[in-house]
Image (cartoon, rainbow, N blue to C red; front, side, top):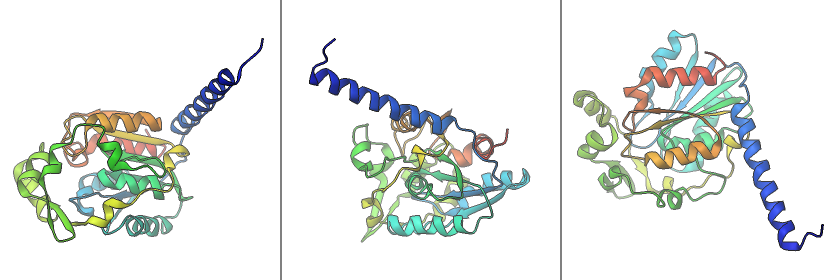
Length: 258
C-alpha cells in the first residue's frame, strides 16, 4: 500500500508521542532505589520550618531528613541551595518540593544522588517551559491577589495567608507560619528550568483539592503529564502541615518503603 507524505508524517509524530508517553510512564512506575535520605525544599511565603511536622515523622521512621533554606532570590541561587544539600547526602536521596520549589525539584532532581521525586502541591514545569504562561491557562488562584510588594520583595498579606494559603489550619498555627514568612525577590519568578528530572526519575505528586494558591486542576495536569503516582488530599495549599501523615507516607513510598 502506498503511504503519502502526510500520512507518513502523522504516523511518525504519533509514534514519537507514544514513545514519549511510554518513557514517562516507565520512569514513574520504576521501582526507586532504597533511600534513607530525604531532602525537603520549601516554596514562596515560607521557610524551612514548614517541614517540621513531616521531618519529625520521617525521623521517627529512621530517615535522615534535611530541610533546605531556599534563599528565594533567583532560580539559579535557589537550585544551588538544593544542590549543596544533595552533595552532602551519603547515598540515594528522595528530593521533595512544596509549591514553588517544585521548580527546584524539576531542575536539581537530575543530581546523581536523587533516586525519586516528590511534589507536594508543587510546580512541575517541563524543561524551558514558561510556568507563568501555563498557569494562566487555568483560573487565577485567589491567593495571587494577596501578594504585596515592598520594592523588589514580595509576600502574602496576613489576610490572604490565613484564608488562601493556610485555610485549613487553626488560625493560631497559621499566624505562627505567617510570622516566619520569607519574602521572595521578583527575579525569582522570571527563571525557567533547563531540564525536567521527572522525565527520568520516579515521581510522586500530592494534589491539594482545596488549594487557593495553585489551581488544583493545574496540579492534576502536571501530575498526569509526568506520569506521577498521584494522591489527592482535601487540603489547603499546606497539606504538608494539615496532612503530615499522608505526605510522610508518600515520601516513604518514594524511598522504597511501604
